[in-house]
Length: 158
Ligand code: ATP
Ligand code: MG
Image (cartoon, rainbow, N blue to C red; front, side):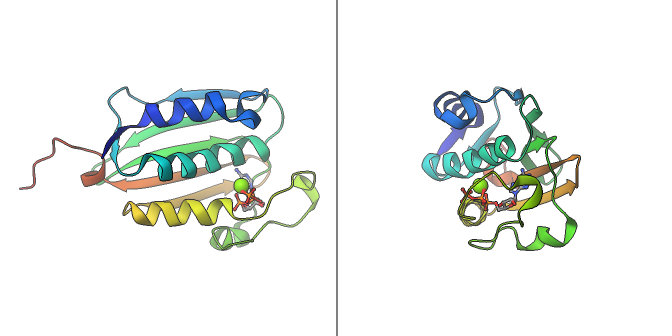
């Protein structure tokens, strides 16, 4: 089913209490015609996990950007924050169930460590990949990379 990306993102921002009640500055840069072929419920869950994380692991007032990036072979939904960041050795393990980065900086933030495992699972259902990049102390970017046959309805195969 073809879904409009903004129709997934908007209700997440409006109805998720931890997002709507946060004082983060959320910037959206998604064209009105950005689409994806998939499951609304699953993608809602994946995108909301990423946005909730961005809020949870970055300070009050921090900037969060949600954007749609297109390239030759993929279209990406990117969630970037200016939060605590992640040390590089943790990155390959973040999508494991129950994996959480140790205490210290984000210690007050509870969680089960299932969010990113769900994201990975949902994306695999959509032929998509999760790309994670981060600068400790600066922030993190989580990109859901969809192959264009999942995002461009009018592309005719050659
Ligand atoms: P849950 O999502 O199940 O409530 P969680 O947020 O701890 O718990 P994940 O969403 O799977 O679990 O994230 C795993 C770990 O990755 C987190 O505990 C956190 O250490 C790190 N992490 C995830 N997103 C970010 C982010 N945007 N910035 C910094 N660290 C992050
Ligand atoms: Mg989480």
